[in-house]
Length: 336
Length: 286
Image (cartoon, rainbow over all chains, first blue to last red; front, side, top):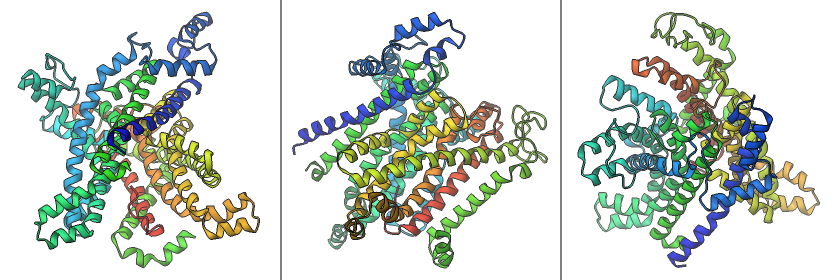
């Protein structure tokens, strides 16, 4: 199969997956007890106002019609209007998205760096101190609640040492003057404003390190076991027999061949990364979609809650497609 | 059956690192179970009544200090274990009670039903669990059963997948074919021949699952979607304690957090050891 054909098939295959999640979200938010109108207007709202509101939001129609309307709206990118701000939900989500993307991107970088280096060295030094350290590290860090770890870092680096800010994305008046991508570290560099860049990095360090370290526990395990596997293979023995340097054996032969399964697992962990991002954003008052979701839950802003969850579903689907495509590109066997 | 097997081979178990891990996990778990059961005898004060001045740092009489309402932090940490255990237990039982039979039946029947149910379960499985739990919890509202339900839904696919994949392998085994040949009913085959063979791996999943459920519960209550205050709950106490870290009241966040870490550590080390013992050929699962 050509790569293009593979990509197309992969995208088509993900449509039912997205449809199932959309359906579950719809039924969770519409069918479960809890009347959104009463929740918005309060239990003492006069019945005629409630009816008028129900009619306006289409909640008086049969559930199947509501479901089809919901799907057709999402298909054209209509996520509804926030009952809290009266702004289109999609517009709000797109405005919050770069913050979440920036946080998850840098967290992933932290997690991948720790995972690859610690995992590879642990596998290479199987049974020795580095290996024991890596195993203990991954077991311990796996049991850290991400919000607790975040608070601890805030305490140490923010409150005790005063090195880094403990919340938000930027200091007042430190927002990049021209927004291109919405990712502050990149925009600041594009603007050539080094002061804003430093400020953005300072705000980013604690949340990204928090989430990155917590996620890295799984990466360390996975890299370690996959590199162990490829170190015992014949091509590694052959490379060593040819007199290849150990460093080259480790990174060029063992790690490179261990990469496809590692990539797949990293892609799967993306869901965990997003869940962690919600908690991290709340811990650090990071103005992303997770923070938006939690705030809007407290305002009972149902279109916003639904929109944020649907947005997450699409985000997960896009990332898993991308991971599969990258894998197919690296390893042609997957395409056939 | 398993305790017997484990007792017999305790020497072998101590031989490698997974055995040591298993024992550490076991000790941690026993400690937390005792803590939850005997909470009223261990805790020096009521967890929901002021017991001294507000925001006292750790000192004699209040070894973990007091919070902004004058509640004793140590007593709240002790009682918090009850909430963690009950929610994790209810959620895990519900998830297993739905996931295991579904996996058994669907895996055995196979065909179209199998592909449809598996696709639904896989979609839920790949979706971030916490986000789904947040959505359900936000709709159902606070409360023990509601939170347990929101967490349970997330973990149903875990059981379904493990059971189904094993049933698919086992149903083509000779002894199952044989049972079919002598005219055993599907119900008998499933309960007598298939279920006993898939249970060992389920026990490991169950115990790993409790660790995850405790973590998810802590997350939900940290986000304000858990149990209604003032019921002692580690996640809720952490989110409340965070408001006071700028004034350096570290004891409000350090101790509830350590409790979560130790209980999750206990369950994961226990299940890891159990896994290597019961399914030595499966190896790394996560």
